[in-house]
Image 1 (tube, rainbow, N blue to C red):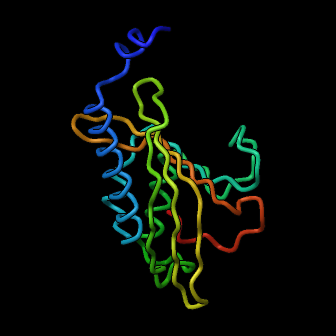
Image 2 (cartoon, rainbow, N blue to C red; image 1 turned 30 degrees about the horizontal axis):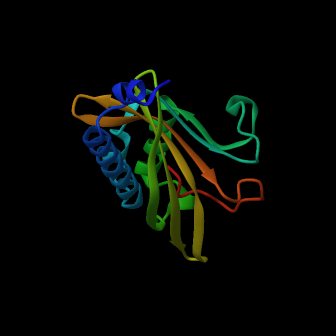
Length: 172
């Protein structure tokens, strides 16, 4: 393909930059809502057909056939949040103090109108047992909904997912 043909199919640089800024702001907001235990606002970010996957182990091919820390559809996401809202989820009583640092946000592709984006993270979780650091990469499937984005998918790839993991009860 010639350079001029390629240029006609690429969105203008200003449009790409605007899309990246929208994705960045969404990812920052999603992390803040999770860190601050704002379960109602966090849940509102998801689409009705959403899938949330935190794999355990190294194989990422077929999530339904692999060991996972979380493999939730939209209904299970709601159930998990309902449990947290009761205050009777003993692993999170009191709730962990959390802060995520997000970096390397990029749009990596598009699939059927959804934006595929990825970011690196480090999360600090403070509990009575001390501070635990988590690191990894998050892959998002973001769906435009009017002037906003919503999460149709979230995959959290922990750097140590192939090792025994201590409790990840802070994950929602």
